[in-house]
Length: 505
Ligand code: HEM
Image (cartoon, rainbow, N blue to C red; front, top):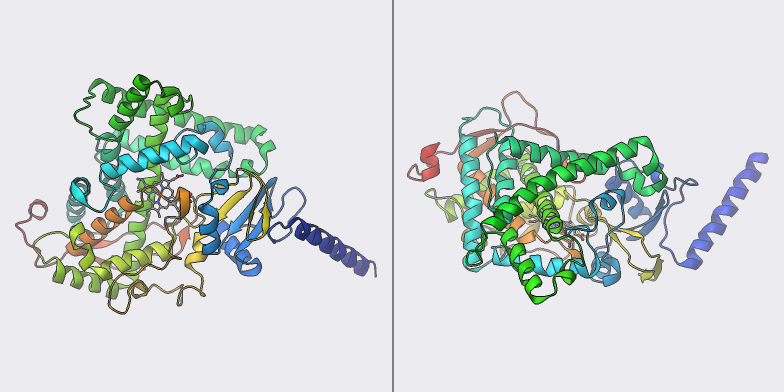
């Protein structure tokens, strides 16, 4: 009997709290434990959130420790929210408190608006665009790295190969050449250190996550030592970037803008002459801002592209019939005398559709990048308090059976219309949407095309003898990466050996 009374009381309390919630119009969601909220029940965030969205709908809320979190899995709501100013801030986290509001990814308000406008304009001038001379220059930068990548792979002559190191170096070199006109080799000690700092940064970011939900924990010894390490690593990276800024300053020539760093130096110079330097970065230290911009663009633009290419190869190993179809398309359209170029892309719909399908099914940034509300606001009739974390659940949008036919199946054809042309539905949003949408989507699409098409044009891709197919399970982290795997690459017959890079093979 006492158990029944206890259950009744719990039920009544729940009904009371839930009606309180409704009266405040907070989005629906599960109840958690006192203090901890729902946090202890979340295992893999994108998986748990998707389960909750199936239960509570396209907008739900949860309490994670002290933090109120709103999760959006209805693409129309994501679009509606992220085009608005009040959903454009970034959360105040322990990580951002160390990095400061420098850079582009973490900045907010008018500083972010200025930086975004500036970067958008300059990156276009440096080739993040689909036409003109700048695009050709960008393509030349990418193709240079593609060729080095292919030559490195050809040396393995079909032996089991881990694509990670050579791909990482090539993708890094594309972004580094654009940002600061440098390129590295795989054996470069500075480069290795740089890469390990980035990787450690991602790990530490994850390790410190709990302190975002329980701020008191930042005073615990473990969190303190992580924060100290993050700060040390930031200083070491800053030193490296500062050397680059200094050498650019010493060799600066306004008649020859080499890269993004030169553009920042010119902008700062003009701002000083024009008397608006203080406003430009809202009083933040100029060189530190350049350092953080380089860091932001490098980390946003390297891991994402590398991971998507690795997933493409994993899916090609699982679906050799798709790889074969791409190779046939490439042979017909491009021929065997050269590598594919961006100009060929409109005539390679199946290749393009396959890349889109990999972006959809792998959803490498499953939770997008968290936004925050700058003030109390409203969405879909619900109240959203100020400083709520707002998570766009891209993974759920891309796996929604109401939007996609058998979403768990790998089917490039879903991106082709009846005429065989590429068509992208509005609920395909791997780069996010709205005001903070990915700044590098054009570069990403160029690189993905050039690397994937060239790799499949040059090599047959197989799972090494005696090894199982690589897993389709992702390793959770800031991005969803495939588990380690090796691949056997053999040069395809009939490749014209008059091509420079193949001669070198
Ligand atoms: C932001 C995806 C490549 C630079 C984002 C966001 C997503 C995303 C989902 C979050 C948008 C939001 O906050 O609402 C991807 C994917 C990529 C890719 C899937 C490749 C496959 C790149 C590249 C660069 C880049 C190559 C740079 C060269 C950025 C920057 C932001 C961003 C700077 C932050 C924008 C801001 O806060 O205003 N990206 N990205 N990304 N991305 Fe990418």
